[in-house]
Length: 264
Image: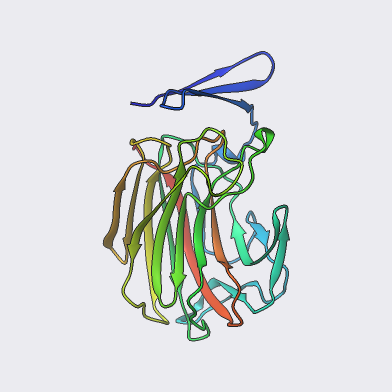
């Protein structure tokens, strides 16, 4: 069994020791973030206050009327052929919002949200993440951004759910030492239907982790095992569209996001 021991030193470093086959000692700065202590959140997407923004165009992300209920407000995300957005790791085809909250390791967390794929989504056989739990790289140790610990894609006309983890204490690239798992591939989806996602996860780089996912009340993932990298801070949630190149236009709607801690 792997244990996580945290000690604070007078040099303002937190030393996190993971007792595992790697026998690694991970040194972490002390993070003084009130955001990380806000373990409950509800967002109806009537506005984007409190969300981080990774998009560059007016059409990329907008609060609009629900296409199924004009009295309800939802988030509309659109990504066109050449909609690139630059981050510290380069230019990518993306239009996303993200939370500043970093999940705690070893604590169960429940996430809920709804997505609707309209007729405006022009299906293509490319990777297109619509939700992801992105790891927080240990930049003070030279780490770069990596594939998400959990990603929900729309590949062609099917939901595809995958994880990526690693037993290495430091990941300097996105290839070596990575373990990728496909957890679910759906039947062809229905357009113009509000899909309700209910995700329960415990982020930990050991067999104590889990991911349980329901779509429209039906269990589609019941996974036990590693769910994170060996990082100083836990993953954070992103929603929108992050994809490979295609000339097609993708449009998606989001509603009713919530996050809360569980009793494990």
